[in-house]
Amino acid sequence: MRPLLHLTLAVATLGTSLGLGVDWTAAQRGATYALRFHRPLTVGTRRRIESDGEKHQTVERRVGRRWEAVETEDRVVSMRAVERVLTVTAGGTALRSELTIESFSVRLGDVTSTPIAAGAVLTLERATAPGGDPVWLSGTTPVAPEIVASLETVTSGSASDSAEDAILAADRPRRVGERWSIAEALAEADLATKTGVHADLRGEVRLVALRTVDALPCAMVTSTISGQVSQMPDLPPGATLANATMTVTFSGALPTDPAASIAPTAEHGLVMEATVTVPGAPNTAPQTIRVRVRQSGRTHATLLP
Image 1 (tube, rainbow, N blue to C red):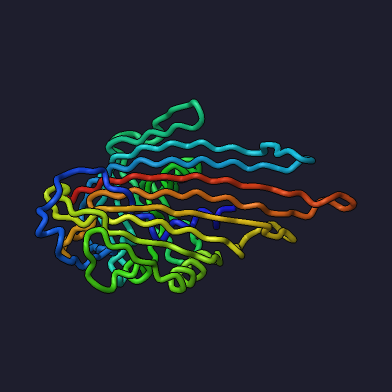
Image 2: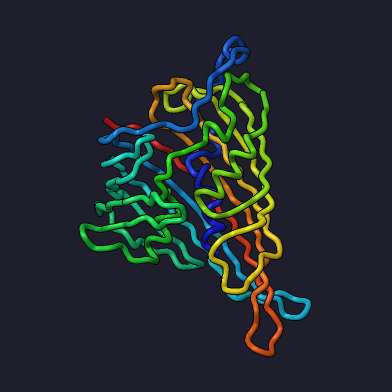
């Protein structure tokens, strides 16, 4: 079911603002503003990241008329770190980064732990191939898979150059309160190329307000994208996708200065459900499996000298 989780890749850096700062004047609100979602980074960029994320997933098997729980995951992660960008893609997406951990905590169910000590330095090599896995190292030692699962809850492991500006139709200046549709065909093609997931997508973007966040004049933008998934890779042999739906929400504080290299606040969410029919053993009926996923994340980034 891992490919389902990749549905948020194109929007992982966006989200609901933390509501910081103050509104601008009425005259400024009446103007139009060019929106820029993707913010190219350069080698050597340093930023302090405060990131919190949650993942709640259940896998159930249909038994007669009821659903029986097979697997449950409840993961809550909090990370404070300083990131230094070591390499970037041609489009300015961070490819390789060094993260100095200030704090890192994980809650799995009712158990809380701190699997990464303050002061630890990790290296992240983000994946460039569609559906690829990032590489996390502590020195030259690979980070344990269970810790990587928590890191991926609060960081993006993909270095695919973003198509956000085109998908979210940032093709002309917008006014506060204006709503517009996403470029649906482009969003569907981008999702299929990057993840192998095919879906019928619909979505709307809105410029909600103008605020100053961390001393940066920003446009506060929100969006909701919903879809009916028709095809996904890596299903078990012989399995068929009976039904799958997803909704991605996000909003963020987008600096109105096109030269600003980071969006200071972001929050994103994903709600997803998929039902799969899996062939049974010889002379047994097929099994029906249902997967439910709910993810959310919030990030506050501060540019450092």
